[in-house]
Structure formats: C-alpha cells, structure tokens
Amino acid sequence: MKISFTINGTQQTVEVVDGNTPLLWVVRDVLDLKGTKFGCGKAACGACTLHVDGEAVRSCSYAVKFAEGKTITTIEGLGTKENPHPVQQAWIDEVVPQCGYCQPGFMMATAALLDKNPNPTDEDIDNNIINVCRCGTYYRMRKAIHKAAELHALQEDSEIQNS
Amino acid sequence: MKSKRSLIFIFLLAVGLLLANSIEPDTSNYKVLTNDLPNEMTSEQAFHKMMDVLTHERCVNCHPKDNIPKQGDDSHPHYFGMQRGDGNLGYEATKCTTCHQTENNPYSGVPGAPEWSLAPSQMFWEGLSRFQIAASMMDPERNGGRTPEETLHHLTEHALVLWAWTPGVDAEGNPRELPPVPLDEYRAAVEKWFEEGHIIPTE
Image 1 (cartoon, each protein chain N blue to C red):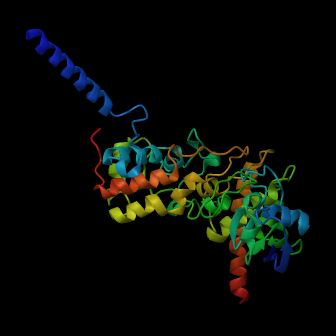
Image 2: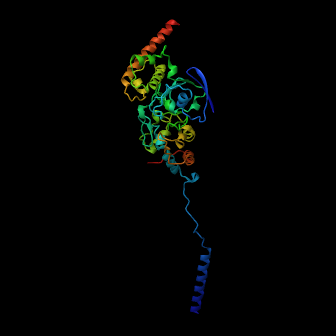
Image 3: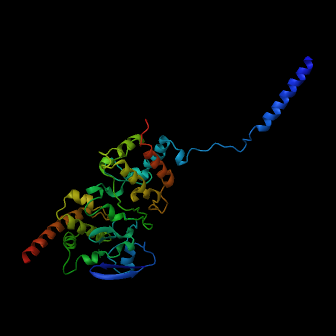
C-alpha cells in the first residue's frame, strides 16, 4: 500500500507491504531520518517521540497507515543548527545530555508541551514529560524546559516587534 | 367358586401390568437442558451474566476511582504515572493517544480502540460490588445523563466497550485475557436484562 504524508515540510509517499509497520521504522529505515530513536518498542520509554499533526506520538506504536495525509515533524525538522528551536537551544545552554540517546524524544515531547502550554509549572512537566532517561538527566532537563519556555516567550516577543 | 374368582383377579392384574409396561415411555435418551439460552434466562440470570463481564478488569481498568488508569490482568496502576488529565484524555503533550491509537498495535502490544479514554470520574466502578456498579450505570447523575436506551447502546455497541473481546496481545506478545462470557451471550444477556426492566437483584 502507498502512504503519503508531509514530513519536516517535504511531501513523501512510501510504499509498504504491511500498513501496521510502525512509523518509526519508516522514518528511520526508509526515509533515513535517524534522529528519532528506537528505545523499547513498547511505547514506554518515549525515545521514538515525534509529532503527528502537532501532537506528540510514540512512533514505535503508531502504524504507518495512520500517517496518511498527516503532517509529521521529527527532531530534524524542529530547528536547524543555525536557527535552533528554543527547546534545542535550551538543551545546549543547560548541557542536558549525557549519552544523548533518549534526548530527541524528550525534546519533541517538550516542544509539544510548550506549544500547548508556553509556561509549564513543575507539576505540568511531571505530568507531561514522562519519557525515560537511563542517564538520569531529569534535573537538567527540568531546568532546560523552564529555560526553553523563557526563550520561546522571547522569540514570540521578538516576532511581534518585528511584525 | 372362590378360587375361580381369585384366578380371574390374578389374570386381570397380570394383563394390567403388561399393558402398563407396554405404554411406559422410553426416557433413556431424555436429558435436562441447560438454562443458558438467552430466551430462557431469567432477568436475574441475565443480570449476573452481564455483570460477570462488567466486573472484569477489561472493563473496570478504565473505570478507576482514583484518576489513575489501571493496566493488565492484575489491574496495576498505569506505568509512568499516567493520570486522568484533561477531559479524561491525559495531559497536553502526553495524552492517551500519544501511545494508544484506534486499533491494537501488534508490534508494541499497546492496546487501542476508537475513543480510547478513561470513563469520567463519576462513573468509577473500581471497588464497587456488581450491584453497586449496576446502580451507578443506571443513575443519570453518574452515567453521563444516559437514558436506559443509551446505556444499552453503550454496553452493546460502543466500539471501546466491544474492544474487550478483541484486546490484542500484551507487551510480551501474549494474548490478553478475554471477558468470561462470549460477546453474543453477553449482548443477549444485556438485552434481556433491559427488556425485563433492568431490575437489580437484591444482594
């Protein structure tokens, strides 16, 4: 079956034998976007988190057939090196990662949170950011999430002044 | 003369016994039928068959009393601290649909069905007896304002309820336990109980 979607701003059509193939496999192995990670394969750790129509989704548990007509964003599409997303910039500023493997999933979950809740409290963070980091970088991530919220607000103010 | 009468009496008695034996029905193939057929169920039997399903963890796991979804055949709290959240659908960036789609996922073992969510808090069943659950689901104050017809529809037609009979495999790839009554028998029991006036038996 053929499935068409937009990913990181580019229209793509893929042909798959099994529509239940997890989107993660298509993103990594067919489209060669390796930023989204395989962790547990059980939708438990969150390393595979990406956005589908702006919503955080665990792509290891998302059948590719459901992506038909949707807009997908992976960590590669969140920002660029020259123009990073506030979440990416905050992650750099707070030197969050240790091994780094799980961090794209955390950043995508955080970006989805800030999109809906620009100024999250610690409780909001606890409720929403429930991915797993085996290096235990949670403390730095919490700081980075608050920092990202500040950067996000500054960015929005700047855009308003420039408009 | 007396002995002649005795002989006639004995003769008649013997003829009577022979005739009696000859009209006796052969009951060797008779059997007692079970009373499980839907049309033969009493309202109380239908109630208990229905409640055997509704008290199963496939149902009760999503009717918690403490805002925490339950998982598995042992009804443990949902991993990773997932809670009811906004509108019974989780939180802004981590919703039920972050992991649960409209179908079971055979690769991850994550269950899915249309409208995957928790039942509203007033519809909690966890910890209630089957009689209390029935009273709750027929009470418009606690069943979302449903009429009996709407409750019947929810119980027999709602895709999320019917998911219980196609629950897929768990994270280890093992089939999830089914409710203790087949779907057709469950539906017949629910319909029978409603037809009979949805009377809750006394405990």
